[in-house]
Structures are given as structure tokens and as C-alpha cells.
Length: 205
Image (cartoon, rainbow, N blue to C red; front, side, top):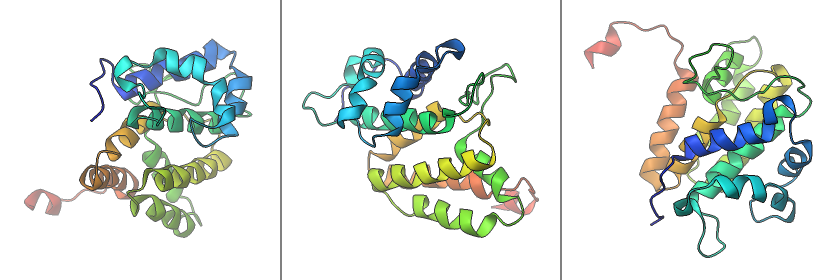
């Protein structure tokens, strides 16, 4: 069991992403290092340690050198953010879906993918990629598949604001067991497949 933390993974990820963006002057060296490594224990990941680890609650920190669920989830979300932020100037590609200001508001990743899915010629290939995420409870495979989806999304709409902090929270929750992972899968599936065309039939069940 991991120690209880005072701040949530989502809140912590939000703080760190904003620290990386530095109000429009992104830390490009650290972002480049994030893009070039896949694990928190990788040599190039050390560039982000001063920023990331400083903002973690003590309960999120590893006591053995094996990354905790929180560290794994937060690092993955930071890397995803770094992938999308590359080449985007004067605009942060992260935004919380809970933001009150519409200019700052982001969208959940799988809702953004659902928008892309609705475009002509995108559904078949995108569905295949999404199924790869939804069919695995292995966190490494899940993160790897998500990185491909983010690259696809970036190639079509690089400036779209994505709620990477909420994604980090989902990844954290998914690591607690198969049941929790499948609950996260259902949540993502609802965001991706639901088209808004509700009928009274769903209310009967």
C-alpha cells in the first residue's frame, strides 16, 4: 500500500505542468528530455526530477527506488504533455476540464479522440488504437498505447488543450488492480464511444 498523500495526483500534475510551461516560456530542455525517455528511472528523466519530485507529497514518493503508482502516472502525463507541446509556441496545450475560464479549459483525452473519430476516414484505424488501450490492464502497455494516440491527435490538432492532469489521475487509479483498471477503461470508453445521441431507451435500464 502507498502512503496517503495530501494532494491528489490530478492537482499535483496540474502544478507541475504549469511549472514546465512557465507562463509562456516553456522549459524546452526538460520537455525534450521528457520526450526522449519512457520511464522515470531513465537517465534522461533526471532532467525533470528537480521540478517533478519537488512538487510531490511525501506519500507519493518511492521509498525503494521503484516508482510509485503516483510517480508512474504523473511522469507519463508529463511526457504526454511534452509530446504535444513540442512545436506549439505561445499556447499551452494543457487545460483542466474543470477550468471556469473557457480560454483555459481543456478536454478529456478520449473526448478529443472521439471528435477526431467523427472525421471522415479516421474511425477504423483510431478504433483499433483505442481498443489496444482498453484491452490491457498492464500499465506499461497502457502508457505506450496512449503515447501513440497522443501523437495521432497532435498530427490532426496540435494546439488542442487536453486535460493531462485528469489523465494522470486515471492512470493512477488504473494501477490498483484489474477491477480498478477496467473501471477506468469503461470511463474512457464512455468518453470515446458516446455520441451524445441519447434516447429514452437508456433511461429504462
